[in-house]
Length: 134
Image 1 (cartoon, rainbow, N blue to C red):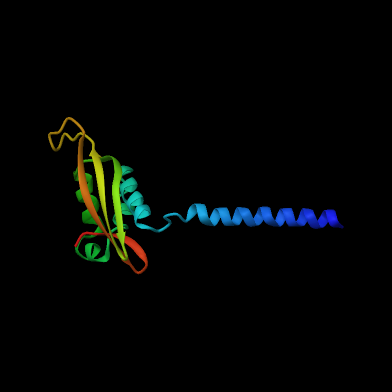
Image 2 (image 1 turned 180 degrees about the horizontal axis):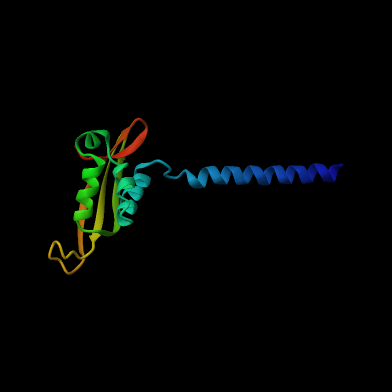
C-alpha cells in the first residue's frame, strides 16, 4: 500500500512539473511585442503578405486594403532577414529598432543586398499587439 502511495505521489509530481514547465516556457513572450515583430518579419521573409498584413493596426487597415498592401510588397524588394536590435515596452505601446536586409532587385537597379535600420511603433489593440503606422 505504501509503495502505491509513493508511486502515485511521484507520478503526480511529474505531471505537475510538466504542466508548470509547459506554462512557463511557452509564455515568455506569447502574444507580446517581440512575438508580433517575429511574426510580422518572418512572414515578410516568407513572402506571406496576408500574415504580415494581419499584424497591422486597425487605422492602417482602414486606409490600405490587403490587396493594395500585397501588390505593393510584391513590387518592392524581398526581405531576406531581420534582427531586432532593441525593444522598449511602455504600457500599451512599444518601440523597436530593427535591422532589415533586402535582397538584390533588378527592378530597383540594385545588384547587392541592402541593409537598413528601421523603427517600428507598436500598440495594443483589444489586448493584441499590432504594428502602428499612423
